[in-house]
Image (tube, rainbow, N blue to C red):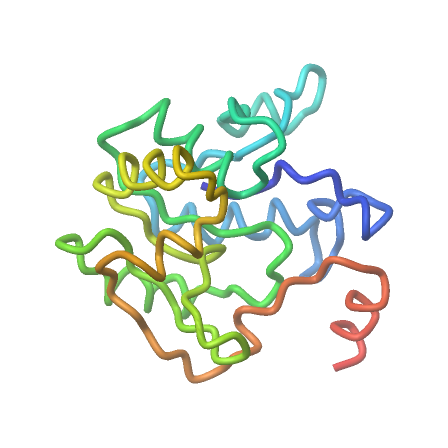
Length: 185
């Protein structure tokens, strides 16, 4: 599940179209995941009508408006409650084939999720995580308590936690300055 439902307000341009790797980021991430995953879905705030992307890539429209990534993940589970979802945010340009393989290889399907530890926050990073089907009712439970943050669920549930060798993997690029910084590295 590629999380692509944001408005890109801080960036001022559609983050899915930014070229970090020789093509739009959405296409790059899609191609990386396609080599490892059975099926790829794009989480969108509203379904594409005339976009060429919609003819090639399956979309899941957010059914929980205003909840960001949490709403996208819940909407995917509503459509496919028995599926496990490898979730990757479109604004994480350092996600690569090796990281996807590592996440899949270290997956523990007996847990609620498998996530990388973000050492900058000392919390699991929900934007590059495998959520197991058992996460769906837990996410709904947290929503009923007023929490719309997938990290909150990850912190409080039994998950497999992976330490990454590179914290750059988990960088989100949300502003033009962050994009310039990424390109200058």
